Length: 210
Image (cartoon, rainbow, N blue to C red):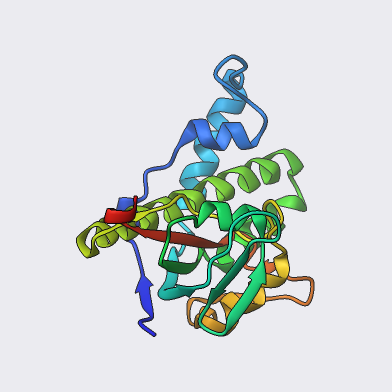
């Protein structure tokens, strides 16, 4: 098993104002007012100072992928059923498991802010969601390039908890990946700490089979 770590420099992370605003419920047709817009920019700058982006991932060969109702997925010593994920992985012979976080300092910043400014804390929640997505997008781009060099096409990533993929699968991520080495913990509730963290599958489909 080839475990790989990913430690992007903060300069590589380009904050996405519109994405942060979207997490707050705004859109291009309904943008934030000037005061809120300035506060979003301020929160982005404050949070960027404390994020510590880290990720770990590994590639596994797939066995006996079954499509349709109750589609079965097997890799390593893992076997579970998911119609939604089996569709996502259709045609794939390899699958990558990844875990990423922006660090515990983000959780601490949000909790401290909740005590005196609930509005700013809500904006920090949104900017944190934006930052972890940007980190995973950077890793996703690297995985795509590496996959192409191996003769694969990378499928869109898919996270536990979406569709019919149970959060129980989180246990397999933490068993197969050294998540603690990037500061990740899986709680009894199957929620990760730090909160702004992501796990995901990325299927690799041979180019000749795409």
